[in-house]
Length: 319
Image (cartoon, rainbow, N blue to C red):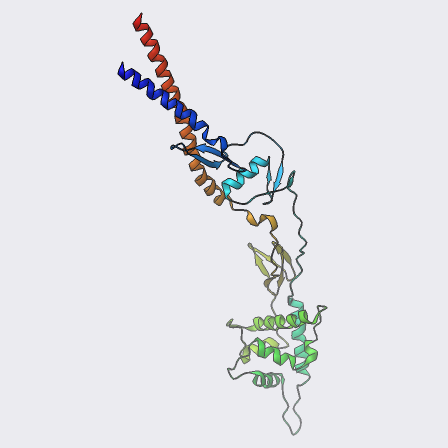
């Protein structure tokens, strides 16, 4: 009898404990996207909402994503750890950017060839034929004279030295493709680099005398280089876009603008892999909490069933 009384007392105490735990969260506020659960110690704990109620009132989040309702938005903010607010009711609209990618300043093949043609024309005017009593100067002699004049002593011309050589004759540099002077000066520098690349056999971005001579030989026909992209080749002047930047094929190279793209609300987005890892990690706690509730309900049902069976057995035995 003493054992039976002790057993029933324990059952009563346990049931009272379960009832008290259900009241633990009564005065706990967890905030949007969270709900109160009870730990094994009977303490309240706020976790992300396991499942929102079926209710459709679409809202647009500050991260650019559309959610079925406010609950789904706040639940996603809780699971991902991001600060997501309601931007406006309804579906998100595609954000238009005010930034328009302008074309970069480039030296096209036509610009390079025009500059080269002008230099050759200028040098040819200095060629002097042999006289009766004097030796003239041929095209190679003129090239050698200027090479020695602008070489800093290393027997090579870099882009700065080549630019000084070209600037010796202002008419050769009269390239005004762009409306502003700054862009035109940049164009000159780019075309100088294009001339170096044209005959730079060892790819050191400097021209020896032989390379310099080959670059400006009137009979030299510059090859046409194409730009490569994803196993395809593109002609000079072809344009494409990378995000908000515009890229142009010029002299066999892609040249792109360097604008900072306005990602706006999408700056808080995370990859699907990162999102999955975060959600899995956060749900571990929710799984433990759910199992605790399930175990509590099963234990309560089992104890109540045992008590009922005990009283039925006792009553039959008395009969």
